[in-house]
Structure formats: structure tokens, C-alpha cells
Image (cartoon, rainbow, N blue to C red; front, side, top):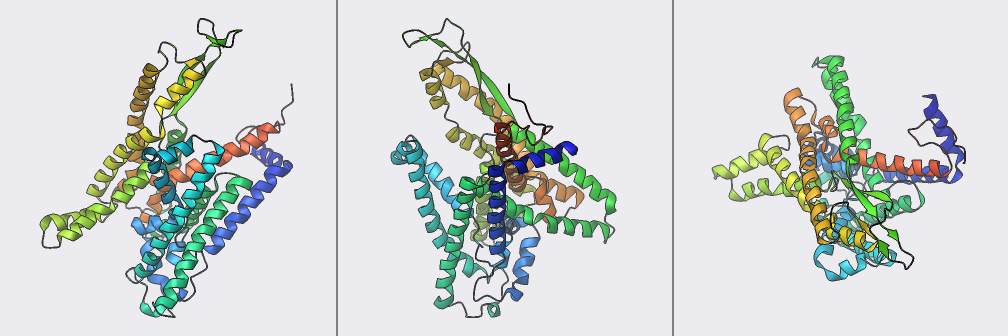
Length: 449
């Protein structure tokens, strides 16, 4: 404990790092404050039914958690940062098929800025579609007509759409400023803070159900917390696990060429066990709306339609999670294939004079890397699918509250773990550059050689 306190003191001593942390906390506080500001023209007192629907877990609960409660509050940040995430995914997928985007990806910093600008404009277009859809869906989600003080006419819809779009753009700006001038990835931090904001309330519901209703008591609460810590540890392993491929670099000759017969430096290519991150879960969750919708189109007169509506409307049900886990495995392979360019890695190695020992440079190296990625992606996809369906398993076996169960796996937990690791690594980089031990080390000042 004393070492940890000493490390915090070292962080305080570095003025640049201290200012970045304070600036990050300030921007996050602004985002959390905006999540509580209700749209003009809506009576916040009559939003209780919408809040109740999002507190019981389910798809609405996930969406509300990602926006930090702004969705249930009908706030100016009700769309959250998710339109920007959707735009980023679309641009990334379009980069596979559109030559112009492929060219931009190869132009370095200037190309990255152009892609970011395209993503911003696409975010605005998505917001323009999602904002009126959100406003018109409030009635179906339990918000009474009397809650709309000015009615649902053009005089309310038009300004509200402008406010929602502006709120999303402002949240996007906050995220970019955190990335540039703060610490950590700004967009990911905004999502993580929103998720963490719902954690105390979810735990309080679980605690009340166990203790006040004599449903297991404090012993079961303690067991649940131990299991939660174990699951977090497994998530850390999934995020950090890599397969290191040894790479030998030949020494340069006097003429500037490469001599493979001379021993050079040996390095490693780290191939991540879960190279796709949480994207397979996001893709799978988006697809999981389709089966229930198809069942609704078939009508209640059809036995298959009734079965599909009943089976795929409950995200904690058996058939829902079987299909959900299968889709995660499929999308893990798909997203890994488009984000890990083994051919490009092989070409870069060849140009820099590097080669995998025992493997010929060029095509054979690309095939070797692709084979390794396929082998490690399979257990990684199974692990990811198991973590994603774990909340449903816990709900069915233990009878846990759905809101609290969502923190036992899936997108929420993986995002929190990934962002925490990334932020700690950035803080460690500042400490090590100032000759201090990292955040998880002893915290003693290092002496220069």
C-alpha cells in the first residue's frame, strides 16, 4: 500500500501528467453533467417509466449504460457517443472495398486526418436519423403524452433534433480533446464512465434483493464479488494475451544491402489472442434484433413466429445466447481477418530485412502468419463468446439481478478492462520517461546509468 501511495506522489510530481489527469477529469465531469440535463419541453418528473424499463437490464439497459443514463433521462446527450462509434465502424469496413479510403490509410497523418473528418460528417448524418427516431420512440417506451409540455409537433421535434445532434458532436469533441490533451483514449473513456455510473445502482439493487428479501444474504454477496474479481482477471488475460512470433533481422552490408547469413537482432511480432476486441460483440448484438423482428413480421398466428418472438426477445434466454455466442465466434474471425493484414505484415518484414526463422520471406511468411492467427483466434473467440453469455448463465443459475449480471461479462466489462489497461499503460509511459517505476511497480525513483 505504501508503494502505491509513493507512486501517486510521483504522478503528482510530474506537472504535465498531473495537468493531463485534471483536464481529463474535468471533461468527464462535463459529460456526466450533460447526461443529467433534460431536453427542453420534456417534464423530467414523468420519465419514471422510461427509467424503470432501462433499469431491469436487457437491450435498453445496455444502451442506457453506454450513454451513462442519458438515454433514460432524455437528456441532451441521449444519443451518447454511439453514433460516432457506428460511423467509425462503417468507415473502417468501407475501407476494405473503397480504393479512395485505402489510399488515405496509406498516406500517414494527412490521410488519418481526412478519414477522421469523413467519420465526423458521417456521425452527423447518423445523428440526424437517430435523433427523431429516439424522440418518436419515447411514447412507445412509456413516456406519457403529458410529459411533452409543448406537444410533439414540429416546434418541439426540430429544436430537439438540433440539440441531440449538437450534444453528440459536443461529446465527440470532448473525447477528441481528452485524447489530445488528456490521458487515455477519450471516446473509450466517455463510454467507460457511462458504464461505471450505472454500477453502484446495479449493485445496490442486487444487495437489496439478497439482504432485505433474505435471498442468500451477505454470504452470497461476498461469493458474487469473488466471482466478479475472477471474471475481471480472466478479461485481463484475454486483453493482454499475445502469441509472440520470433523475427530475425539481417545485418546491413557495407553497400547498404542485407546479408541473411550474418546474425542480426531478434525481435517479436505480438499477435493478440483477441485482436478484434469488443467489435464481435457489438456486431452480434446488432444482428440479434433481427430474429425477434422476423418473428413479429410472421405474425402471432404462426407457431414459428411466436417461438422466434418469445425466444429471441429475452437476452437472458437459452436460444438467444446460443445464437449470440455463435455469431460472436463468426464475427471474431471476420473482424480479425480485416484488421490483421498478414500480407502487409509480410511485405513490411521483407522490405525491412526481417524474416521468421525457418520461413521464406514473402508469400510463405504471409501464409504462416495467417495460419497462426487462425489457430489462436479459435480459442480467443470461444473465450470471448463464453464471457459474453456468462451474464445469462449467472442469471439463470444464481438468480442474480439482470442489471448487476451485465457487469459479469460482455461488452461492458471488456470495455472497462481494456480502457483501464490502456490508461494505466499511458501513465506508466510518463512515469518511466521521468525515471520512475510504473503504476503497478514499487514507485521508487530510478537512477540514471
